[in-house]
Image (cartoon, rainbow, N blue to C red; front, side):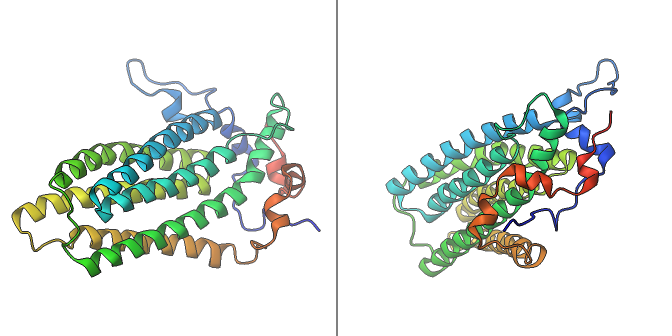
Length: 280
């Protein structure tokens, strides 16, 4: 029995599909303006590079966060590391989504586009599951933080470590968020858009750490700012993930191993007819 993954996905019209692979032709930029193709007209290759960069950053932040938690015992640092671990898993899914299968002829633009579109739904559902997991993790850690109150500072190096971890993270993850959301709009990828939300969660969590440090320096009793921000972020991730799985994709056989392991070649056969047409 073969399942279709295309039932609930809105795809671009046939005259726009070709832009996902080659959308730089026929576009000119004003002389002297900074508008490279990877910003104005990104393609799948650019999305692959962005995903690789994101994997490297999130993997590094994961290792750093867990090591610092072992040394300091501060749960915000642990949440920082775990959030990046889950963000790393999300980016791996996106990396898979934008790489055509080996069985697809790379010279045949039409077959490459169809194969990538066929992978989009599974990638989108996969990232939704990751976001659900991310929301659960953030909510649990924030609730533990609320319960223990301000008794989570283990060493005097907390402030310095937190600041130097969170400040560059705001810049890095903020930049990744903007690029992922921009690419998601250009490439019409719901999966990449959700991955951008994961990076946005990391940006906000890092900002919460910075804000708590600033506020707690003024008043030690305001220890709850960071866990409060984390709790809200966790609820938002839970909502986005649950909405995508329970509402938008409730008719899909998500518990079926066959649905997850169905070959891309079979999925291409289930694509709607407009997506099978590539303009000359």
